[in-house]
Image 1 (tube, rainbow, N blue to C red):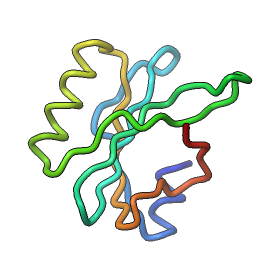
Image 2 (image 1 turned 90 degrees about the horizontal axis):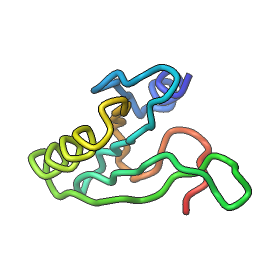
Image 3 (image 1 turned 90 degrees about the vertical axis):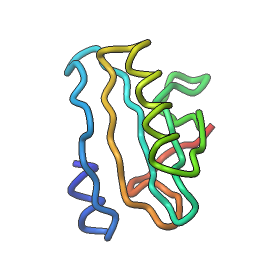
Image 4 (image 1 turned 180 degrees about the vertical axis):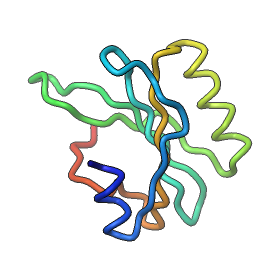
Length: 96
């Protein structure tokens, strides 16, 4: 659903790595004018879904290194990238 919404809002996205359907975490890459903002899905203190800024990368090589490190730690990880010139996800998201 987020991929469709992103495309409809002019922020196309793609699944870069298909993680485990039941147990996989989500790493979100937002490709903006200044590079990449990398977010990880987490929970807020009340247990509600939220996003945590884990890194910024100036170029594709640095973003790939961050993703590869995360995938080594969590092979079930989903990796999704969106074109996001404004640096914001194409869906409503609580940021921590």
